[in-house]
Image 1 (cartoon, one colour):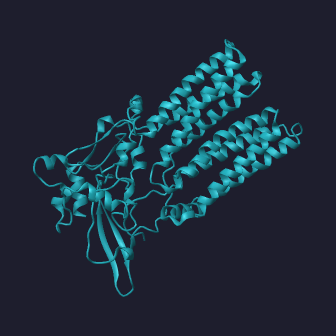
Image 2: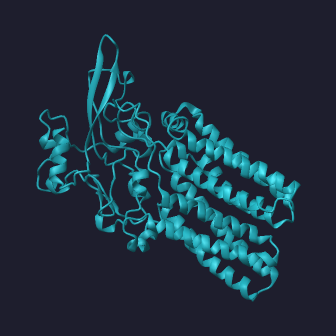
Length: 450
């Protein structure tokens, strides 16, 4: 690990920071067991996932050398690049409130010196050279840089590993059995649920009676505002939040922020026209409808933020069902509680609840035999099983059984409406927590787990 030490010292990293790591590949047979060290750092990809995801344009790729640099002053610490990189290269520095990463010791290269890791390696196992991009594209289409590493097609990494010792099919990562829940991003969890509920309330307001419409619109506005506050609290440097729209050409996060910003502004207009009745009934519905459409666009952007990452657990079909399911479930719940059309609303709630649970159950059983999906499945059967059972049970009670009972006896159970509402909210928050904690992150091989 001389390369790790040299990188740490040369770049002045803090104790908990590492830009280069050493992992292990293990395998072989009982006659010839194999242990192979592999050193990993930023792959300076041809199509960097970190750069396309960044909403503040805090990454740049040198047109000549291909080096991907992080611009610390431009970063506001959203950490989306950490999720978008298949190799866990960008590292979040909580004290500084920004992400940092390897830049291949660019200053040393300009001075004609080798990067610190190259210079420190006693066996000359690391070499820096220019690569042929066409060859990288061809190789990335069919293989990964290492056994058990994420597929190279996502970002086209330029690192090459070579060995003559053992067939790649015989090896696996040393930390293959290390199954630990991912970070629970509480601010993002709250932002997603609140914003989707806010859009659902606006959707319900379109066809609601005028006597309750104002309350729904105000509630949608307030929850949307709380979602923005929650999202801002996730940033390492929230005072730079205004930079979030700079990456709108490539970043789904920028697009989400723009969409929900417009949604919030239109919510304000909807509150005004509903409060003062300055327009007719038909015009008012059109304004609320346009606001809802903007919100649905924002929900779609939320889906794409996660769907474009290499995490199998966040695949587009499943994430679409979860996010839009929350929105339409909220609208159905409101229509159920308001009374008119209660039976269709109850059927809609039950259908949406079952649809979401089926999708979540399929993920728990790891369809497709993808190794990252299988790792998520092990999390849901292991450390997260209690949370998953709570989620499934609460949604069956509040989303399926409760609405049916309420339709059958709406007057005899006045507290049931509150129980269904509160229980559904808690269930959705648990589902969103599992959304983050069970999303096994693709990564390069690590060390052997005891």
